[in-house]
Image (cartoon, rainbow, N blue to C red):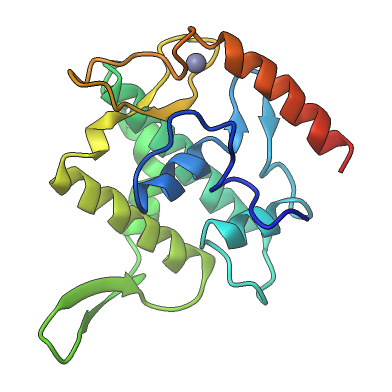
Length: 194
Ligand SMILES: [Zn+2]
């Protein structure tokens, strides 16, 4: 197994900054063009989820946890489609996030210096997933969230971070997805031989 699977993927040409990279990497575990889903099964998913901080390295993954992760992934994708100028997601699209948010999965911590932080309440997948949503919350306040967008090529829909000066970027790749297509084929081959 390589040291990192997705967070340092050199094929990711437009990575998001800081912790938002984890959100982008989660969204892009499903290649919507080829339907290649790195979280498709409980055997293959754990190393990726550990890398994304969503699974404790010594924990077992159960099917309902994996469903929660992929549900939130799709809801986040609906939100980045909206960031790219797409329609506002409807209630059904956002339900996985609302369902998760209805449970007390986060805890407020106060350190000796008086800094307040919101953190996962325990080590469960759902609590860690709620922790990832605090990254979205912080990015929304910082103004970086709206720059995480889905590619305008509706066969692609890859999540990219828009670093263009006018924030008007619409493609995941400068050459209109062409290079990435090749990279993806390469990546798919590399995965199948691993
Ligand atoms: Zn694209």
